[in-house]
Length: 594
Figure 1 (cartoon, rainbow, N blue to C red):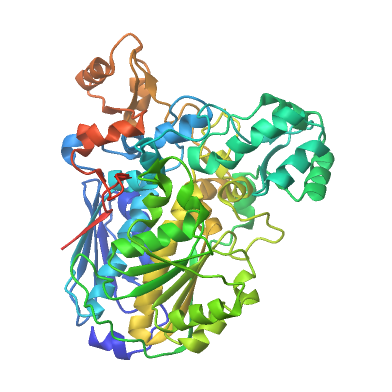
Figure 2: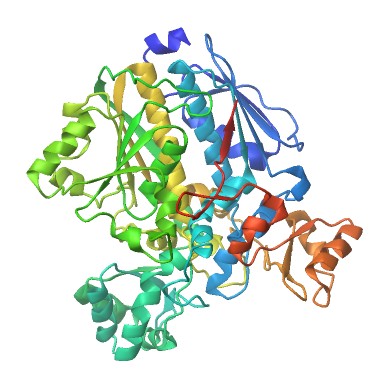
């Protein structure tokens, strides 16, 4: 693509042509994101095509076309839609932990993740070509995307030891005396205790509640004492706000989809800002078909999930990832349960990375980090707002030492919401109406305790970094890249927000994606077969016989995975789930390149 290298472009896909075909649920979001990145769309077919797999082709003058194919699963598995993907991969099991039974997400979470992964694959393939590679085809599957979204929970289920806290039903949101549903957030045990003391909660309940609250990000449940719920029910909202103010904890009322729709500006989920010309180094290691980012270096100063997952995916694509950790190392390395002494959850996001301890509060270490950034291709972090500037490590500071750097910030709110609370997964879910979207009509709204937005935000972060690298390759400019949990929430809830904006019911109908009980487990019908399947009483049948009965009536369904540790032996994923060098379960790479 000689012309694209020498001609200044505004967006990374300017001048490229896009053709797509297949089911809208598989190809729609892929095409939308490619258009936002500058691709020109060929006329779409008059009638939506239902055949799978879906295909997307991106082409331009002087380059090989890159073709992407996305399918639901291996056809032999009979996993054929969002509902059956959620059931088979364990998403229903994890999301349902708060209520004690498997429940489907009323949003198309796995399909959304697969769409973002498909865009990543296309961008990586194009980047590999511009760097001398020959990647021309990428394949993704929705079931593998689903496995990736539960990879931390899967790793923990297959660890050498049990969880450090009880797994059981329970968790936020809380309800005050006026009926206001709200989310509570703090990372400080002192603030937790002060909040509850201000509301006169029993001391033993305060003590016993902290650990399950603290671990809810890891376990997707929080069975803390009922006395805490009773304590907040005794007070009006103003008193709840006062308790938060004096303690340092934060509270956020659950927002509605209708409310989010009225303020939503429909901005892209990321932004790319070139910051000046810069001639980047030529890596010694050339790209290969399966590792299009080989030879590139990523510095990652990430915590928890969002930024570490972004860097993990860049590493799977071939980049050398150097993880910047505080003195003493990342404390989450020791978070139970462990495999060979290392946290299984930590390994799911950080295996294969190099690590370097840096004290950013010390000027000599900051100088060393700037020197590393001068030789890197990407600097990635998800520090609290203002922290990078305070320590001289923001985009402007690092562009001064490396004008060709792709500086990536994965934040909570992207400075788009005035007066926003703490930018954590559950607070963003609460503020943006995700609590409504993930449950069907007739159920009270509640943010999922599965880390939906941290994972999807990490995926969007990878998409944004790849777009920034591609823009850099075409323009010979450094780029600042911003993505956020807010962007992830808006991508995930976009169909519901459109329904709300049109005045329609934003939520899915009552009972949507509720699996059906059998004598020894659960089954989940496909969405199109759900109503007919629910007319059958399957409780006296084994899961095997219940599936046979539905199949005999022309109805499609699959067994619901309830124990993630059993996925290793599940014939629907035969040979795809392995173990890493520490013995921790590892899900397959989400793309295949040829």
